[in-house]
Image 1: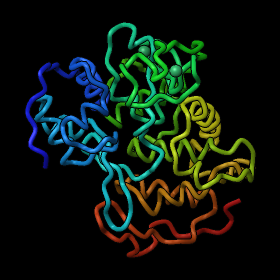
Image 2: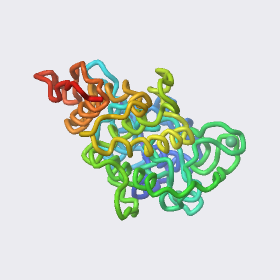
Image 3: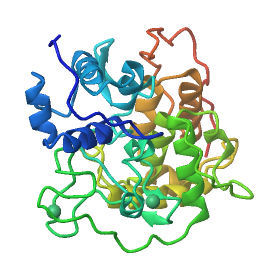
Image 4: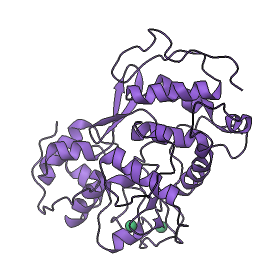
Length: 327
Ligand SMILES: [Zn+2]
Ligand SMILES: [Zn+2]
């Protein structure tokens, strides 16, 4: 581990600030680009930071080690799979967290807020405070935002980030974003729909699985549409994620009651592989069990789970045996 001294200018992290957003602010306060700061501290020039680099950065910035470790997405290899770790939790779905491709609410930044923790969640596509879409690309040069930009509100092309058109108000989407932010990073969004329009069975699922379900229900525009392996692995742009979720939220209405037979058109529109993947790789039993129930509802359950985050094997018997007469 590199031996590091504290940086000359010290700043405090804001509450609910993203770890990389904080590091970007520290670098700027010290008159450095983030990459130059990492290099100056003898660390690799990458925003995919490992545990020892984060420990060194906690010393250099004089912040709480555990806070910084939880506020930055880290890769976590176990059982031969690549998981992610963030907010003290494991994440199995490779789409759940934005990682190297940040998104921001320009209005929040203009009001002096930092990069917020919940913007790390791919399924958080709007800011509930401002009822506006988050952006992940510069309106001037079109490039996707990165953590190597010169300041939290400035693109690498040098232009200030500008707000997109306001998002259409949707209580269902607000509900979705609020529940994801609460599950994913304990962020209360101050939004309380009188009656949740999301299926109740989504309630006990982790933020990781909730996003995986949103993706599986919305990624296909029409039945049978091919989903490439890259699309299932790489977090989409904020705009695309917003369209995927808008479709998913409509289709989830058709799956409010998993005891009823699944409509054929819905069944062919859901990306079954995504649900199956959740069944075999998940971070808690509620995720696995609901994925199993969903597969059964889709009429698609014929394999057994292979591996769980806690290392158990979940193949001691079928939890949800196949039933006939499903359609
Ligand atoms: Zn905002
Ligand atoms: Zn730009």
